[in-house]
Image (cartoon, rainbow, N blue to C red; front, side, top):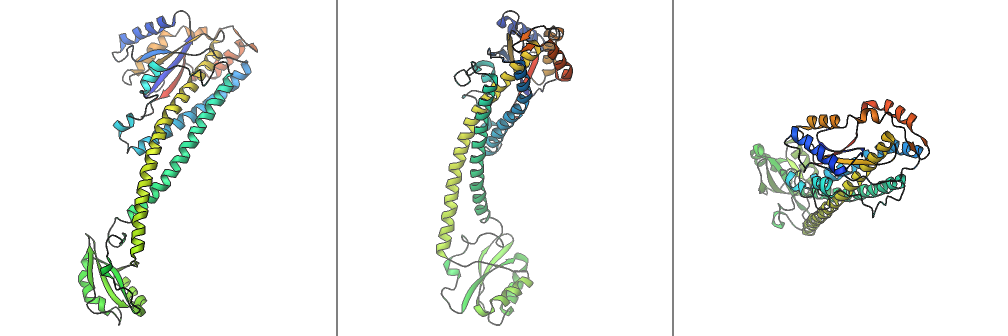
Length: 393
């Protein structure tokens, strides 16, 4: 049974009026499920493609599943990008998962038309598939390049922002200290900054002057404090720098490697502001590109599905290529019953498609159709069916 988390597109030989067939099927489904109505089933136009030779159809049918997988994955990656950009907010995501500014359901059930201007049916099936593949590959490459660029800028921004967070033993001190906390332009003296755990503040006061013989007495001052650490400044002679730091490490006091420079602080702030502005700009560009490429890639995917529907129908039912396509939006709660009704409605095709004796350009198909169905019987329904996955699931 097909997934109840997808839209079903099916085809069968057209014997009679297409509108009458859709109406009859709608009535049958509505009788057994209140969730099925005229708004969840519609005719899906299948163009009169050039069939080509039997060999070309067989070769194409073998390639189409690979293309289908690639197309489906590309659409899914675009949706994942949108989901990440929108912080996985379903309401916001639904505003961007649109096809020609309409919902997916509306596109499939109401607006679907083969795009003749882009994929003229006078072309061969292989040429059309190649065109679709080139377009989808272009979308995939553009999304990958844009996403990589955005992630690089986003990663750089996050790294800069991370430096402003955390406790005083690890965070950037550019926005914590000021010029007044440091001895300036001294040949012999320097100011060090020590992050002291809150439970060791008394030890700091009692010990720091004895960490080396050239520590300026009573030079320690509180610069800042958080929940875990107190940041102290202390003045020492440069010649005892290494000795003092070693004593601090042994007593679990963290000396911050920081040299005060107003120019460097201004530069860091400017770099952060620039990264923030750039990230916002790239976020907007990527959102717009993802929204546009979702619409484009989804349409390309559906066009490929219709080609698969046609090729499979010709291989199974033969010529003339006169088939009806139907799109159904199943309700997950009644999908099993819906599928059962479809099987019953099209059960007459179970034997008809196996005994068909029609000719394709390039040779007799009766022997091939029989062998083809025998090999693939476990995947066959009496009608041809493909799924368009619900991309927001």
